[in-house]
Length: 287
Image (cartoon, rainbow, N blue to C red; front, side):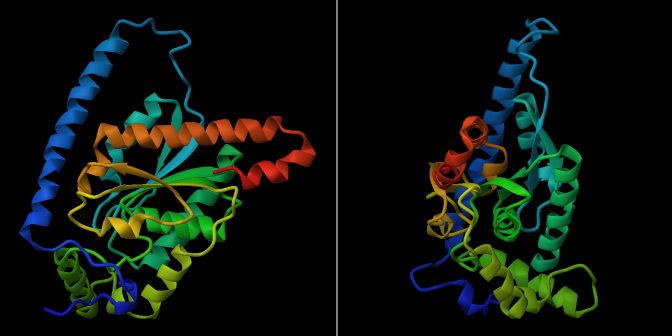
């Protein structure tokens, strides 16, 4: 079966995982979710003995928007949201119920969402995006650095969006056929292999403002995308041993996300404390 994904989405040197063995690696999502459950129980017991008020109670302030991956919705990042809220971040949903619509339209809606949050909170927003969500985040950050303080991409194949398992290519073909049949709100063939796809990909690879922090989390065990496609030269790379789907629930990944967000807080504090004539040079070294 031929793939509906444009050949330009799979540059030379890239190729998606293949076969049943690759998909079998995704079964560890169950283990990673169980690890989260154990971690949550342990944290809950630890918090239960603490007084209601005190320095351990952190009020949520820094805004973070969570963006789901292909064919996923905001609910898949609910555990990540709860974890970050406990650590003092104010999380927001992307308002994507199922990420199956045109990526360019999704990017435009995400930009509007970020703008509304930035105005409400009076400051820039950080985006945590899983897979396709990370690509959308990078595209919006490139064109609107005035809205985005940083990005954390989880298993996002920015360098080769088409370097995915054949199962995803089959899903793409199904969506394109349903769109052709008249179902609205779904990715069309143009979104996978036409000018729409090309424009979305090119936008996700635009140069980032040096002031926008960028962390890319990847896994060599990824059974869905070619992990090499996640190694954006503009990002700080963090390797984990998690499955692709498990990145949304693995507490190890959550810890890395938290580390990235804390680093942004430190960088922002340094910028605010720096003399005016040093701010420009500090921004260049922000990452």
